[in-house]
Structures are given as C-alpha cells and as structure tokens.
Image (cartoon, rainbow, N blue to C red; front, side, top):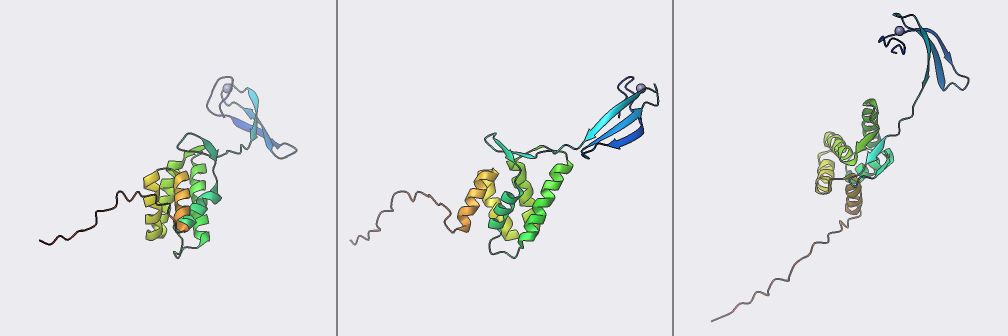
Length: 170
Ligand SMILES: [Zn+2]
C-alpha cells in the first residue's frame, strides 16, 4: 500500500483488526520512508460478472443458462451434466481470475466452443454451426433449443415449384 503522504510505494502493517461483522479489516500502517502512519480499510467486493449482449444490453452471468445451452448441443451424446457444469465453472473462474466484470456473449460462445471441442466432436460441431451463424449467445441458445426439439425452425423458402418435367415425344 502506497504511502498517502510521500507516495512511497510500500508500507508496513503495524496492526490488523477485523471489524465486528467480519466484513472489514482495519490496518494501521507505517511508511518506512517518511514514518508517518495511516489506516486502511479492506473489504471484499463482490464483483458482479456481467455479460454484454450483441445489442449492447447487459445481464448477469448465468452459469445455469450456459450449462443449459451446452446440454442441448450434447443431446444424446455421452457427456454427463457434471462435466458441463465443471466446464462452465472453469469458464467462470477464469473470467473472475482475470478480474473481469464484463464479458461479451461472443467471448462466452467462443470459450464454450473450445470446451465442447475437448469433450465431444459432435456436440462441438452442433454448437459451432449454430453459433457461427448467429454470432451471439442469445440466438444460439434459442436455436439449439429448436434443434433439440427436432424442429429447427427451418423457414426455408422452397422457391417456386419446379416445372413438371414434361416429356414431349416427337
Ligand atoms: Zn511516506
């Protein structure tokens, strides 16, 4: 902790006390350079990890939702739900270790793809094909939901019906 008086980069802790509710630690410090004393209060900050969606809206990181999306890509594949939960746990830990408070839905999609690839090629391909087309987590979750139900919302316009093949005999 930098000294607030002389801005020396370090300080010595003389005394450390936890507040009554245990949420705050008070430290009495001394600057080894100018020898002045000061007090710091340390409290844990609960960082809310937010997901920035493609349209710019933000919503709290929801591990359960991501597990759900992966589970749909893993339908009928030999992957236990615990594996997916562990994978999403790792993703969340990684983001928190980086002290991130925001992550884009696109980034999450990419990390999820990497994880699935390690686990199961088929699940990866399912996920990736949907994901790459839509490029955001929201749509791929919806789409995968559709796939799982066996009704992939294929609004494919068949175009004009082909002309009847006519055999003309001459
Ligand atoms: Zn100082």
